[in-house]
Length: 448
Image (cartoon, rainbow, N blue to C red; front, top):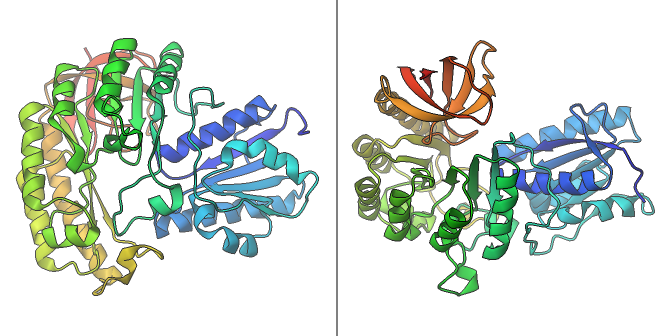
């Protein structure tokens, strides 16, 4: 059996969904007697939960693994474990290239980390978990050590994805859509409420697909939200990742009627050129996208819309970027992330003709980022002189002289923040702040 009171050092990379997986691993480790420590040097177990979605994420993950491998060379008794999407994608190659790693686990099997570690005591050679199609779905009784501040938490309502975007590796890495049982999700909501959570963020690859695999009319995102509202009093409920074509009026109406569901819509549009959307296998058009934004703003006039756009997709021309820029200027979305297309082995887009050079991708990205900066500054400027409720995070990461928080329109670790320069409060407080300054991403104000 594993010895008690060992220390674990965790590096969790990638999105909030990956963070929840990390919390599940930490939960099982703590249950088995491990303590979480802040430095790799003081840990017995070095754990890296990787992202392998695009090339930049792959490079970041490999760099982290190699850094910890160097520490393991100095302290051979330490165990080095690597999990997640990178392993699911490149497991066999990683095992050959980084022999310092004791154990590789893909996107399924991490929930059994303890039993895998125990097997190492009788089988010293590196063990590579079979790269089977993922099937794990967590539940409310799954051990989990929440790593976010105590006033907020993520709740993953599905695993995998059944959309088939031509540029995306997620279905191959995470498997098809697997929704969690609605009754079990409500149990988790109660757990979060009892622990003092003030902001609960629902996450999935596509929230709007929740329940489709159940084949039941009573299991869907709207029904789940209604039950969460009725069975809890958590003041802020945020939705991350809404697929554009599945965003129905019923959800918008529910958001308009219930202020606890924050008026924040994360819509990964990726592009608006009809030709490029078709190549991406995204089932909507420019006109449909325009109508969707108009519909959102009609029903939720104070809402914030966040999206991501991709530049340099194979076959993209300057006129496609012009169409995208014109859309951004017309609709002035609140938060826009621009990233360049990454040619991923195994995706359908890999085989498309007319790939763009890295120079062209970056040039187009810079053009759109510059455009969005002016839009973001303009959108933020409308808050100056106004008062908004802010969820306090604590001392600012920039300076101890300021506090930091977020409005309803700012998601944690994604968007900008509010710097509070006057007033008293504590992390987790919901306070009214009057804004005196607006910057491209952030706001400054004082507690009323």
